[in-house]
Amino acid sequence: MIELELLSPAKNADIGIEAIRHGADAVYIGAPSFGARASAGNSVEDIARLVEYAHKFYAKVYVTVNTILRDDELEEVQRLIRQLYDIHVDALIVQDMALLQLDLPPIPLHASTQMDNRTPEKIRFLYEQGFRQAVLARELSLEEIKAIHEACPEMKLEVFVHGALCVSLSGQCYASEALFGRSANRGECAQVCRMEFDLIERKNDSRNQHGNHGDESDERVLLHDKHLLSLKDMCQLGSLQKLIEAGAVSFKIEGRLKDAAYVKNVTAAYSEALNSIVKSMPEQFERASSGKVRLNFQPDVAKSFNRGFTSYFLYGRNDRIFSFDTPKSIGEEVGTVKEIYTNCFTVAGLKPFTNGDGLCFIDAKGKLFGFRLNKIEKGKIYPLEMPRNLQPKTKLYRNFDKKFDDLLQRDSAERFVPVDILMEESEEGFVFTMTDDDGTEVRLNVECQKELARTHQLENVEHQLSKLGGTIYSLRQFTCGYKKNWFIPSSLLSQWRREMVDLMDAERAKWISGQMHAPSRPDRPQPEPHSIAPSVVGVGYLANVMNQKARQFYEDRGLKNIEWAYERTHQEGVPVMFCRHCIKYALGWCAHRQHATERHGTLYLQTQSGHRFRLDFDCKACMMRVVKEPMK
Image 1 (cartoon, rainbow, N blue to C red):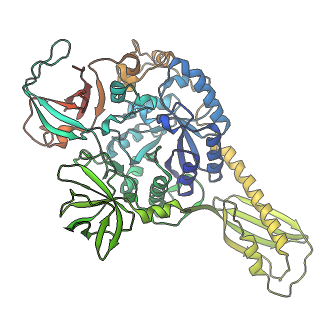
Image 2 (image 1 turned 180 degrees about the vertical axis):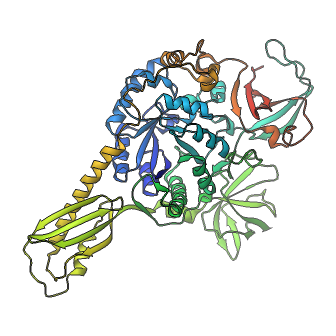
Image 3 (image 1 turned 30 degrees about the vertical axis):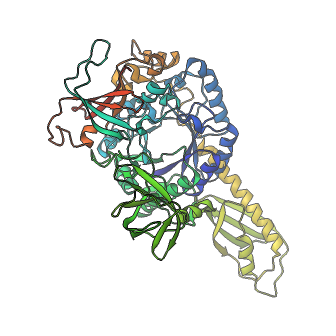
């Protein structure tokens, strides 16, 4: 039986609890420090609270410790990992190989996507080092995922299925460090990919030995103030079955900075989709956690923050991955503007509106403009402030659905473990058997004097035993295994119900202790070091070696002359981004795939502050490299 895991983000413990309540099998949350979202750290005490709740449903908690580390941080991170192990965290998501050189407890390690996990060779290497779950690069196609699975079937493959996309290969983006001294590999990404750029073409590009340009008269601006590195958001809701067939078993929702409403909605949507797959093939698949979810709303991912959706490269290269006009949420398309009046307008609508909705549109200049609805009256839309740049036939989008958001602000889901109770008669009293949905069974023998009742008792017996509020259990079926109409006081039934719950809690805790915390790697994974090719772990600065222990780790495996990470050297003239997204392809200029006329000039991206990046195109590998140019 293959377990399918829905993995949801947790900005904090409360959001993590909501993710589990709405159907997550596991959540990932930032440690107090050393996580790839520096602003999303959480105390060990809060993480412990989340772990306690999650384990009631056999759900897991993964903690991100996935930055590259300085030498002076290693002792502190070792202490932190011991604390996380002591509160029964289920795994750590890590990037720095120095951790394998430390004296760590036997806590499972997952290979962060920051490790640039794109090839069968890399995944096999990680498995040999003791990793048992790897977060694959977002850029992979179904064929590439399948090839990795076939090459290393022992490794659990985790894939991103929803949320924001990094334009550069994860772990191989240094643009934020280059511009602002804020390292993405150390949790401080400034999101250079969401900035506005001019696209500049330079004919007969020539630079002197210092990299400075000569005469700029041969330059022209092709595009002005466009978000040329900004991608749409990933949505693989309709592709889960194909991902499973390719070998993926863990499905990750991006968003460790997202609010509770986002996590509730998106988690619920993907949980329902996975449930449908399990229901269609119950002999083959099951969910990785326990319990059922009862929703108080109909999930719809289009109603949560999104920049428009894309399947990215799952089905190969396509021209629907980018969002050049805006990096902001546009939400769902709701209609087209018909008529415009002084302070209102009408819409040929696809969806109904509610007072307080947030609408937006892209104006004639290609800029996103948003406004809030004040009232809807006789088919006319009255904004709080009438947008003057709104034109007839303009598409409208709703990026804030007031009615839907109100639902998510309330108690929007309940998670519970169904139980069956059998009550039978014994010579001394009664015997209760409680069985949960996972097959766990407990028995309670009680002694009591029995006397026949004057009124029918069965309805009250079932009613009292069903009062499971305040627990994780919900009575699915009660079976009475005796025929006489015995009188049983409600107080006794309540007492026995509580005793059954205590027994079931204790029995489930044994399962958790035995199953959830069994280490998936040896106490100190020490496979026999053998030589590896530099390309497996990243050539030069791309290995992201920040400390001496990581350097020693690679040297022990045959890699010599290890270069330090970009964050230590700030090398000039090297790529700071590696992208499968290609601006030439996006604009229809690809001579390789689109049979367009070859452009002979050099293309540059230039920020509003004057920083410039050269675009290098490796058409054989179908990759675009972004190189930071020296400031003039």
